[in-house]
Image 1: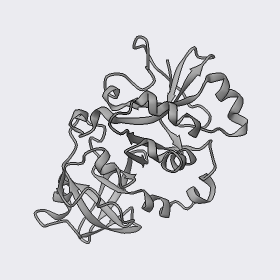
Image 2 (image 1 turned 90 degrees about the vertical axis):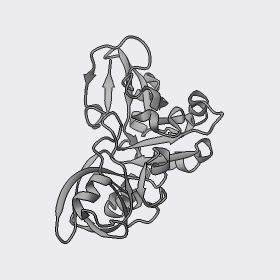
Image 3 (image 1 turned 135 degrees about the vertical axis):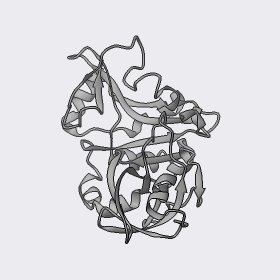
Image 4 (image 1 turned 30 degrees about the horizontal axis):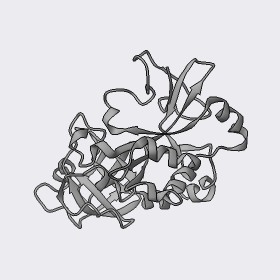
Length: 257
């Protein structure tokens, strides 16, 4: 459960929030742009104790010489293991610092290697990348954000496999394709940090008018509320949700109430 994370009360997801007059409700977007992530990790890095980008959960193919399986996982920055308090069975939490590294769950390790030690064994990911297992983590429970996640690979490997990001997404404030999670330092508040980082959010020229009209801003959505209230319900009563595709963003990532 999320409360098991070491810094539960100081972890949040970076979101965009605002008001959509046409639908008469508050919206929150959980998918972020690449330039926002680099800005937060650069100019605003001092506001956070830890920060990690993640891809959306995805189906990955993992293969040894004897076996090939499909499991869910994500690409993450190395800080993710500390940020989310991975319970390591083998290997250190900092084991994703090398591009060709991989963390796998205990159950996946048993599936792939039986009782043999999986550390430093090689696995082929997605029929393309040979990666070395540097850590094994306990499977996440059902009420966790990362339930049924069985591998985590480095963000740097994701970039190497997706050249278009560095070529075309560096200054693209319209392409929302990642999540951002942060841990704030002790003594700081989400509201206070949110105020400090508000200048990090930018918009493409063609989106400026709409963003201004909706009051779109960065909102740090606390982990303590993830399973109590959906991120789009910051105030008011819980109501039915209308899920839409807005501006090319996948439905389910922008919601209106």
